[in-house]
Image 1 (cartoon, rainbow, N blue to C red):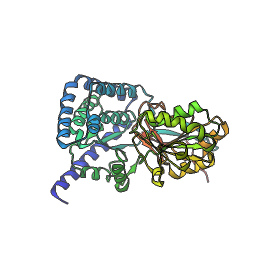
Image 2: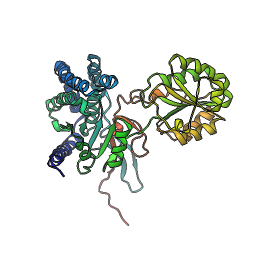
Image 3: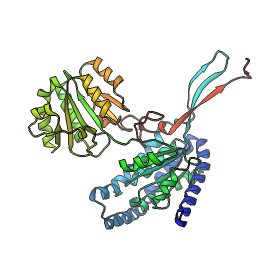
Image 4: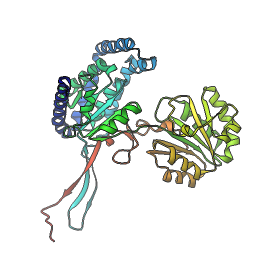
Length: 424
């Protein structure tokens, strides 16, 4: 280990120790105090807009010098509108119900004891993300409200912006008597810091990676603590036999073209054979207005002259752009089989007027969000009433789907007795 690596290791261990100590205080913090800290952080950001702008300007200048593309620079920029959005996000999180301490399923047992479950924080959450500095506020606010401590490692391209935002959050914590170390931003751009963060189970309970597939694959492979994640967003829309044509066209169009570079955009459209001749020509027209490249199976190409013949790889590809693969299937059986074979278990929807087939689709499609007659773009924490989300999970243990406040908590059993003892 080099001297530089030793220094990074010591720095990360110090962050971990501070976070672990802070997490115990945060777990016991009253809701009113946590809300006050969020609103104090809001005031700090609001009153230091010029400081944030200067810090962000440094990052933008450095990004331009490094040759970052226009899309990356756009995500990096803290415009006045984005700062307003950050402030509104803090207000919304402060207004959310606090899940911590909630006791559910309390019931009497034959022995006379009462048994229930209490919602508790996870502890210390490490969050690794790229580009967008406003994620610093989103992640910190959700962790704070859910009674967790967090260690944030943003992308090196947003280093100065993230540090300036973190300073505002620290001011909010200190103003209400909460430990400033409840929210810490890694103070180095050295990539080895990530390796340390994800291998400190004595200090970190959960890692949440937000970024490209390469980052998430690396974290999943190397982490020694639990990871909340999703790798791909290969989302499907299936247009069923007898579906309402207007609904089908609108949902298929919105699912693909509302935004391209998001994980809940449709990447594959499935159409029942009986509907292909009716729906495909209409979809060809509306997609052409958006310059969407269509790649289809043999039957699709017969109805859409401009479609490119799809390969097997297309069914397993998250395009994140104006490209769509289309397959004509015999019916719901083949649609479900295709989805469960090629889906990334993110979001899949059926367009149908048949209640029984819709219920079957909900039951048999193995994804974190399954829908009837709705665009895949609704798979979002805000749209689900969570207020905000820290990411989306396609895992099957703990959180699944959009991860909001409740997803950053766990449960423990609580028992109420009155001198009860167990007699064998």
